[in-house]
Image (cartoon, rainbow, N blue to C red; front, top):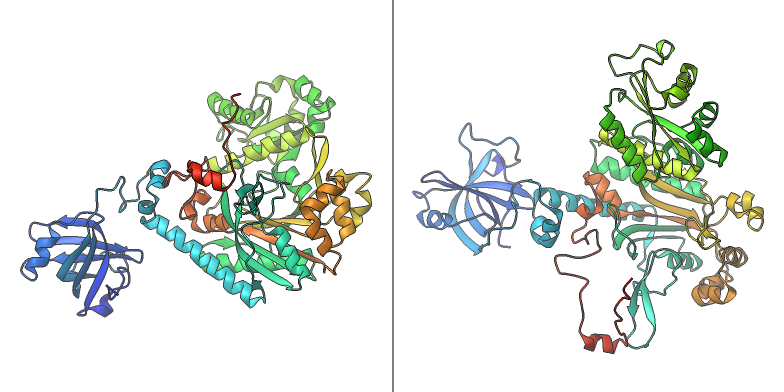
Length: 603
């Protein structure tokens, strides 16, 4: 190799040794004779000093160095002079006294600083991603992702799983997000689809008798982007035979307890993971992926509002709606503008309005709820309430004097979404969530179906291969909305890390589910005939889970979104701004694929 050591490994034990380093110039300093540089590679930094009296030629070359030049330097490891040590660096007690220097490649001035952790516009970072990836923070994140994947592979192997690759070119079965389609040149007019997940294939592997399968799988979904979504992503895909829900959840708990303790020993983690029903999660937290690092539980106050003279809430209740609320701790002193901002935030989530009630400003409020009077209460709807009703609202929501009550009236699903979103926003604004706490939990007992009102039909909440609860199976034909699925999600800090289920393994039940979601026998056969046929050849009971590698890496690295832990991600518009993809292709290529581009019709 062109080097003997990395830029992050030298220390006093190497004193007196001649070494050769390669890397980039992180910083250059000319002290009017001596020239200092920090040489950088992904392992760290090492200070190099060029002394004209010891190595005149190397010193001469060093005067031309600039940031990001690629160099090879040879010299002797020596102790830094007393008082010049850098305790923040592993190499901070030594430096290299250079004897030779070669510039392997010069560099233009980068569009942003690489050696300083300064704020850089994301669009610029993505355009020059190869430079962004040199930055220490990004290198830490990518290395963390590598370690996580390595841990997973080692763990799964020790548990007796086989890693089996499944095809990237597969059959289109558009029953979820849109498929990415790949036209076939040798089969004109026909298309492959990039897999949204290996769902069907991993079930077929269970039919094939492999019993324990896993894969670090690439998946593709043509859907709108957000902070934790990408058009192409990576998941840990797991499937097992001869198991039930508890077996899968126990495996996932062992894996993620181990990976967090190994890679984030500074973090706090509770085990065993709590289990919440879907209904409990939606009622208490307004989300099926709640952030459990803080309280702020949502309470039902419908009956209290129904007994008031507040007609807006009473009308919502008469229409079949509910009123729920939560308490924002210590926010009773919020200004009118701050309260209006919360109201606008609630409207952005779909609420018609936000009912607020400040229980006195902190420091001015009474010591207890029993001492609270209407004089302490600040609200534009206070005239509709008695002090007994206000105290009951406070007791239901866990509010104390000095807190701010927030309530929303409307349809149950709307109220849950609005308050769940407000709860998350308040948790962040008030600093209630410990960044070093991984609050993992399982959410279980999901509804099997949800109603698509626009198309007047039932749709599977997870996917059509999920098995219903045996106790609810008799309701499939008479009351599908009450059927629970044998499904489970693993959540952490407000994110869904993954989900899974016990699968259907009998043809008759699978066809019943397909009929219920309005798939005709012809469509069943055309899209899923291979699955239905496989189930007639002795398919064992099986189930699995898939968890997002990108999301796991994001949480382990403390990154704000998954783009920060993907080497070459797409932006929020699903574009690769570095290479300008997607891009126009030549007419010749389209002709070979028997494809013609039709301009979109103007709306």
